[in-house]
Image (cartoon, rainbow, N blue to C red; front, side):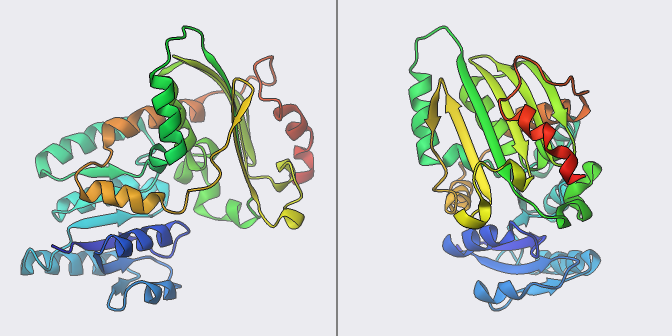
Length: 324
């Protein structure tokens, strides 16, 4: 049976990937809500979506559908709202008898997971975080290779993620630490989830630098030592973004060799939805370790440069004054 979806945060950056996934899995979007009304993109996917700018009216409409019939009710709520609202919107989904599909981060604080697990059990509904990097074909091959290893030593890893953002970023909720969780949470959590999934739990975490533009530190995991660097400063890109016609750089170097996984990101949300609809989606248990790590990074006090710092950090910090 075709499933009905509602989408919270339909005017946001990531919403088109969810719209595509709902469409490509053969399901229907019946309602959407966003305080911003620039949502003409809906017509590219569905032609009969009830749209609301007020959550109260959206809530009332979803409740009306729930009381009509199982065929009419919302079966899944896709959550693309600002990070600090995820917890409340997940609880809304469970309350109206729907499963929740939530963008990263599932919640900002690890203790929020405890109540959500209780509500999940009480409601009989599921909460599905989007952990799409775990579905990337090349990463799955790496995972399979790592699981077969017999070596005792730890891998040495350098993780770099630079995604240039303009001044708007700091004027939006993304630039407000209490709402986004900061850079490590907002742009880094998928990569931290990936590292923990591949190389085991955290043994030690150091934060070397953290400001509005970049964050960097060191992780010792069960099977790896990781130097990480995250930035939204275009000056940190290792190429001229105007010449290259791109503004994002991802790199994961493992034991001196570059692990290339830059492509293949576009279809991962659709694959995530296919897994969820088949009852094979990830849950709170899988999302919790990276939420805990990002929380620990967020409350840590930066120690400054050290021998375990990422190689880009020193040059990047020297250039910070030009951005402030």
